[in-house]
Length: 405
Ligand code: AMP
Ligand code: MG
Image 1 (tube, rainbow, N blue to C red):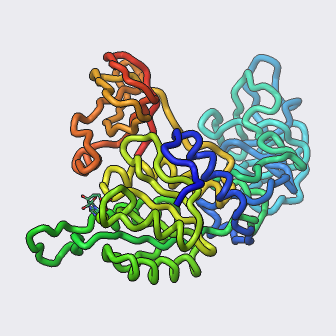
Image 2: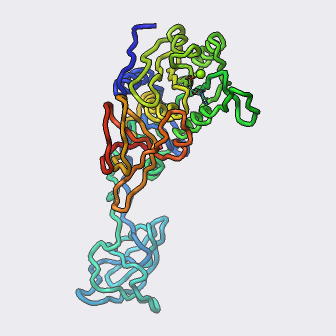
Image 3: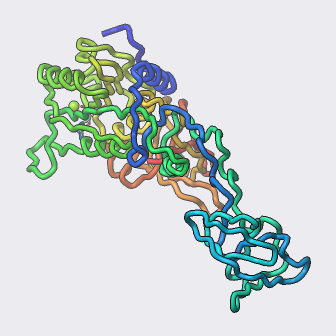
């Protein structure tokens, strides 16, 4: 079980995951826009049309030629027809005339300016239009949002609802996206019992399964939870090799430290290939990564907070690498609202509460319950505070990186 990197720094671990996952990048598939939200775009999009596609009204009101208006005074125009949002009517609006128009309606021939309804007075087929309107007032010009042929979306971008909506606005019915990885989730340990069943002495409830399933679903995936693995190398081998033959990703938790029952590193070395074991991070130091059959194998430590921190960082790297997401995940700077003494060398992902201060700056309060089994502190938190390698005394007001969670 040698020949792989161990006790590596976090950035190196992330790079290894990216490059191994990148080599197994998932294929592209076409998705109707109705199902593309949250997926990673597999090819750039060039706009086939302009947006808006034609000059149109920004308001409900009246459209006319700017040349019909008096220089410095209100003007009364004859109401000569109406154009609503929808098919363009065959209208030709003359000097001294106006037409009723609604928001988004195309501007009929002979008009170039709109006055909003609330600013006009309509009496007996005559409309009084206020003074001082400039030419093109309340008109949305064709192409002012997107010109035809513009590069609007890039390969590797995550399809937010607004991006999918932009594609729909351009008339695009389906998008090439990267396939979603299939993910098998395993919890391990003879001490685990499912919620709802009685606890015998020495047993604990399985909390990591719901944690991992929830984290994966939040990524838009449909993970499959497998039965809990007993701490028995043969049973573990059977189930894990089965899963690795059928899934793109196998994620386990527990069984990766140095205890008598921590069988997974040996199992991965025997059945597949270890890419690294142990990262200089806290929590999550014993994290294991490698390949087994068709699957990428991510062995997260068993403590619940370690699962959270390693999934949100290294787990996301793996998913992003497989789907070739090119946009970085959001990370913010925040001001520490309480001091913190970092007494160990590893990179730390400390739980904390992030909120906007009255001065408009983000503030984060570290949660003092910082041990990796203290799930309640994680449940009370909405951020991971990233504290770089090395010992340090942090003071109130120091600026730190934070990741939302
Ligand atoms: P291990 O790495 O397997 O030694 O697990 C480390 C710690 O995490 C132990 O205290 C385990 O009982 C706990 N643990 C492991 N798996 C789970 C789980 N699925 N739910 C809750 N706690 C767990
Ligand atoms: Mg265990």
